[in-house]
Image (cartoon, rainbow, N blue to C red; front, side):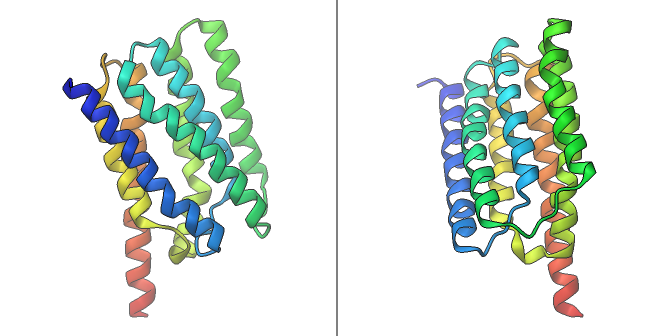
Length: 194
């Protein structure tokens, strides 16, 4: 088996391993994801997957595609189980920016511009979850974000073609996970010592 297949397969397995406890925690109510962030992330991830495929990402794009499908499931679960989160104008703005990537890609005929816009939206879309993680750090699963940081690194190394179109989204996703993990751990330590 080729190394890129092994890396892509490992990244895909980490996707399932990462999502399983997150989904179970959401079903139990111990994890309360911000569902609007997950709606945005699901749309972004699926569009980026198709852009990576068009950009020649090959096997390295598949963990992102599978993640997109599972992210839709998390968004649905988050919505059905969590009615306390208010949807703000800020949230709607991110959704509109996300949806604008498709016509943007169509009119430019270049997946790079869609990936750039979607990566920006993804990073900004972390805002509601980052704020929530700061306020209620025990409602997020650190292991989930650690696995996805590693998954993104493996997905990058499994790419068949390294371009901004194929690398940008998983690289910035890994960095965002690191920031979120740090925020959760620092806030937990701070609140515990108070």
